[in-house]
Length: 636
Image 1 (tube, rainbow, N blue to C red):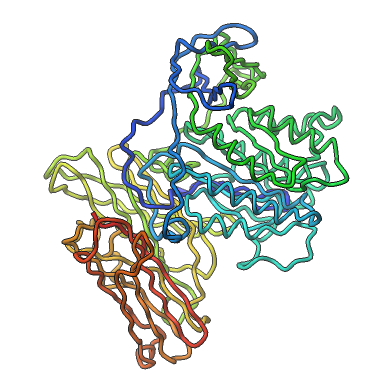
Image 2 (image 1 turned 90 degrees about the horizontal axis):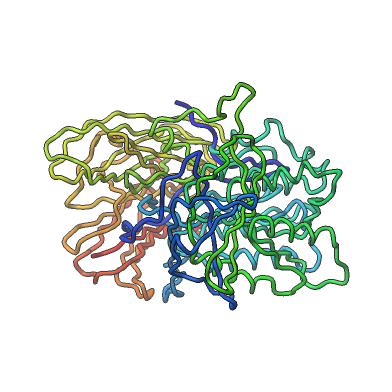
């Protein structure tokens, strides 16, 4: 099975990333999930309702809403309130906000998908536009709740980032912004190659052969292509609020120009079909010149999708919290259209509520499906549960799991091996009854090309009514570079998946390089296939990062040092107040590197730690070169 390429096409015309992971390990959300069944005969709307002070009105029920389609009342199927968790307070320790995550989880459904689109194709370098754009984007990150997934996209070249909650990766993507017209050097890590798609699930939404010159022939072409492709992919996203924050100083899309009506209007249709709300921010600030057409277009896109535009101000970032406040509480409203014709024509929708003075924000309408010339529905072929979990826009969560991946160098070669560890759990198991689990790990380069997959069918026998075990996978040969790894598992029709970006070092050529970290816990979880990683390491790793005081935790990594000078290693554990609660130093002698690498292990004394969250940092230094790896974990 070859999955379609995920959500990113990076050409000078567009860069759009899709689907990946919940980037931090979190416990299952105890709150009830706000969902209801929809189908081709039910239309879902995300509806925000405000009072006169722009504060969300909560507590509305089905009886408080009225839906009009083309002026006619429609039967409402369901109204489900959604309240988003407030952004966590600024932590005492900066690592709690910014440290990378070495494991990912699909434990909770995302409540909001937030796409940050940085229009580097049309952004100038005057008036501090890039500085302002980065400031706006970073303020967005400060507004996120634990349930949000975010992607960073560019309209020209940038270094895009898939959906993630890992702020370290998101900030790195934001800092890579360099306008197309700039003479500045590329950002650290370089640009993604122009003309290349970048991740597996957006392939079908892209026009094959689209190149930078293609979008340049049309007014606003690069931006229109990006927004259109984001919307096309988000049509397949699960229920929940979809927010696109557009940071652009060149919104000359000619949305209201009759000569170009078809082109940008197709983009607006795609945004409407996907139920995406656009908030536009102009980073130019107050200037002596204003381009009325451009600002009108930003307003038009935002208004058509239920958002707002911020411009003509030197501090546009102060309006960012308003966008998130508007989306902190909303309603999923489903109605069944009286008109069942599958004609694909736009239908205007109006939502009313019974509260006096209430203001309602939602999309202006929708497009029903269109049958083909023979009256057949244009429906996609349904995927198997495993295929659907592996190729979806966001990770599937019916089968809970956590996941880690670590790159290890191959002796005498520049390639690496990826060691993949997944911890799976299910509440539907029978003690002593054998269970069959189908799992698959796939890797894609930043052109979206599938480079390999490891598929296994495993038999496990639960020792209790709760099925919990680790699965090992291995991708044997990977060249240095940046990749996306996707892992999916299926058991009795229930599937789950996680997606993660991986940076593979050039182990053979670097003076100093580190593998990823593998974590072993004693007592250990059952492993479905314990021999799978025997050629990589002797430890028995787990992707779980939650420990009891009685557990033993051992962290393992491999150090690569080309010049055989020896390596100084420092391990430190910090608590939630950034206080050091554990430390150890060790010198790996030059003789240890006769084969080019040396193994390093450190045991962490859980019994000495109070309940709470911790960060293990392992730093290796040789001469002027310093590298580090981090592991977040929790003691309960």
